Length: 167
Image 1: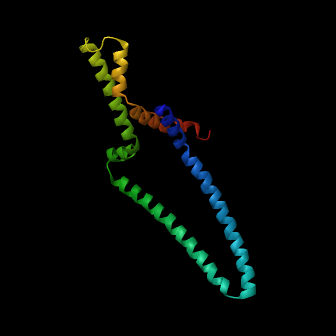
Image 2: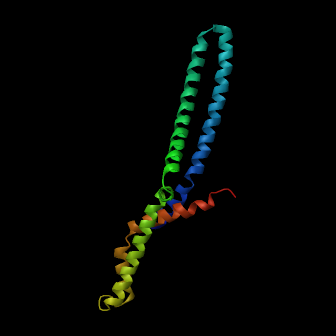
Image 3: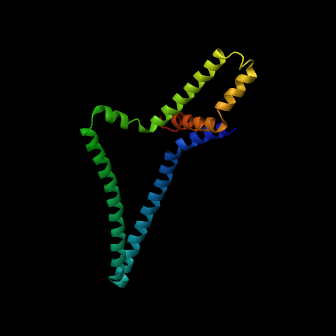
């Protein structure tokens, strides 16, 4: 049951970027409406109160500049990574591209090794495992619910995201 829930969780998490993009878009639109409202208020208050509203406009501009600076810092960090990778060997660049799936590779290789170990025990120690219940009990001990939950989450994340992509 836990592995089923984690597989479903992996599938849902793989769609999380699309959901976050939706909320970011909604937030951006709300921000634009708010800026338009503030600009209208500024023009009205400048006409009525003179320069008091000008200070608020400058605050808004300062906030916008801060947001732009943050975006520029992210861009600069990505550009730095590109520069570093352009000087790195091709092997390092290829490996950096596989950092995230490396843990998945290790986990799947572990599962394959455990399967090979179980099969080896079945064939080399015929007295240890005499029927199918013994095989299931051994496999149940090795492949715990927690381990199957992790595997389900990994597979759901990597392969479940294909349904979320635009065609």
